[in-house]
Image (cartoon, rainbow, N blue to C red):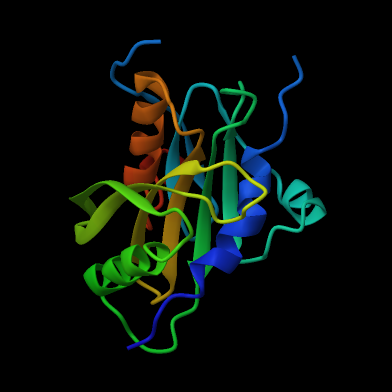
Length: 194
């Protein structure tokens, strides 16, 4: 069985995006105000989130397996909550449930790993897991809250969407991250196909 790329090597550079220092509520239903689609994968963006351009990712040394990144426009505790989508070529065919469980196992060995929640979800009618945990991938960075889901695309590539945030989040931010992670899709949005 093919196992995912070592998750630690993928998370360390991504944590940098979250930790950019800032310059300067309640819960509720999260509404998708923008649909991101890059030709391979899509995600719903709620109000207050923006796409991070590839040029900025390259400047920060973010690996090419990060195919999309998004940041909240406002910082939380001096950090910008971030959501990334990574793509992983799989050496052999794998079903989404197997890939999802493998990614959950992979992050469970991160330094300071603590499980918050795992629950079943569906991504394009495929069974997956929504996995929320805390970890401290690098000793010089604060412990971080991660919310993650993984799926295999129709082309056979593995995709993982991961939300990074400070340990304490508002219900609004938590709902936004959950909505984004659960909205991962390999189906082009209708509004862009018309």
